[in-house]
Image 1 (cartoon, rainbow, N blue to C red):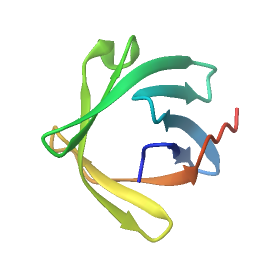
Image 2: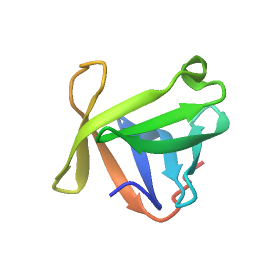
Image 3: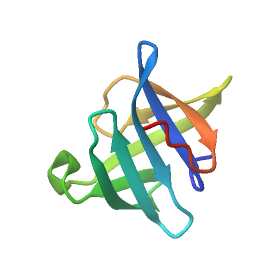
Image 4: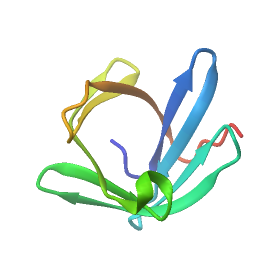
Length: 96
């Protein structure tokens, strides 16, 4: 669902950030303020884990309970935060 595709976070009518999970376990994160960062992802204990060099102070960020919800993907944060919905785009999608 995520690997090889791009998750898109919107804010109103514009794109706030995108993250592309490459098939080689690397990832690219871009936001609407020009930040570009590379990181890595793994799947452990049924959780999709991101780790960036700078974003989130380099701490691993874990997502769980993925489900397709119409045109969006829904999931929960490992921290127990509310469910999030993101629009997946096939392949590489870069609106910036």
